[in-house]
Image (cartoon, rainbow, N blue to C red; front, side):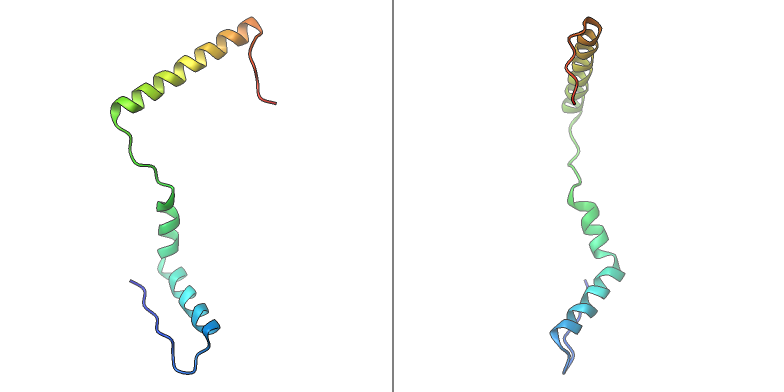
Length: 74
């Protein structure tokens, strides 16, 4: 836990600067940013069904591409 108290006669600006410097040096913000968007692990069946869906979509796209009906992003 990072702790920093305001010193006597210290301005708010200098206190915030000192506090932010402590936070950056400790690596707390780096860790928070790393964990911010971490996805929870999916169960096996959900991963499998997602993989099957991707494979099926890819096959449909390849078939349409072969027939000349594929819609591509532009």
